[in-house]
Length: 400
Ligand SMILES: Cc1cc2nc3c(=O)[nH]c(=O)nc-3n(C[C@H](O)[C@H](O)[C@H](O)COP(=O)(O)OP(=O)(O)OC[C@H]3O[C@@H](n4cnc5c(N)ncnc54)[C@H](O)[C@@H]3O)c2cc1C
Image (cartoon, rainbow, N blue to C red; front, side, top):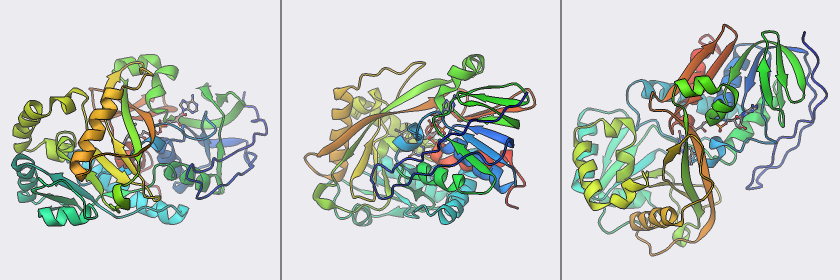
């Protein structure tokens, strides 16, 4: 039998950059919901926002006081241009949704695009092959144009590059929190933080604060799927991919608007990695920079509104994440970023580990447990890029 949720304070967090600071107290206004969404990372937020636009009454549950998972630890790079096939379709829908929700929620979604820095002819060959196929949004750049997009800095050996015109950027320290705050403000939506989802019996969603009646549940808990549904996680080989990251001072106060990708990025994102030329590039990087492939690096950076640079990343996948950060991995990444920017050293402000769900079986996991519980997990490092597209499929008529 359904029971009423106890009065719970909703405290939406401060942005750590302290550009805004809001605390709301909200008591659930309705006793029963059409849908409960579990997890206030970008995947849960995307589903809650589409549910809202479908005219449903929504309960969003987040176990932490504020989301602190993958969705706030990333680069904030909506990497549309680098995707191919189905991912590109999802990313294209998501791009439009980011722009739409950005306007509605007062979130800065910047159409800065991205830039690929090419420092070898084999890197250029990947970009030229894609450009030759008319890949949408990709435009070749000269070395001088790449340097201009890097704010005037850059390695001496840059030979050219490409503009990724469809890419967007958001500040990852703000985006998820701003969207949650906006959702909490919408009629028909209740958001409960510090509320752990325990399960659903077909009538009542059970939480660490009691129960609420609802029609159905969408579980968007990322890599913690195994805590709730271990058999599903095991069946789909869902593991944790840990990434080492840092925030550094921008050398000389340089302003770099686009997201910056490099040779290792060309080996990861599907549009680049799917070219014929990528094979030769992989062989060369394996021979010349085994240190980067050893840590599965994607050497890239984005700039935050305060001017600091988010740099990364490495990848290490296992079911349970090791808690110890490797100084060797950090050093390798920092050296690689220094090389790209053509600087001797970086002044590090923070280091952290990000973790996302990973599976060798595909880029996302969509599962129905009975007819009332849906599971949605992005199982690759593209959640900021595709989550809104994936969520739209759950509510095909929403916002029409
Ligand atoms: C370092 C790093 C860099 C990345 N860079 C990019 C990038 O630039 N572009 C891109 O597209 N993608 C990027 N990604 C991937 C992207 O961040 C993830 O795919 C995406 O954030 C996953 O979103 P999520 O909502 O599934 O997970 P999360 O953000 O981890 O959210 C899951 C939420 O569920 C909550 N939760 C878990 N269990 C419960 C429960 N029982 N009850 C209630 N709440 C629960 C958690 O507290 C958490 O807040 C990056 C990832 C990392 C780690």
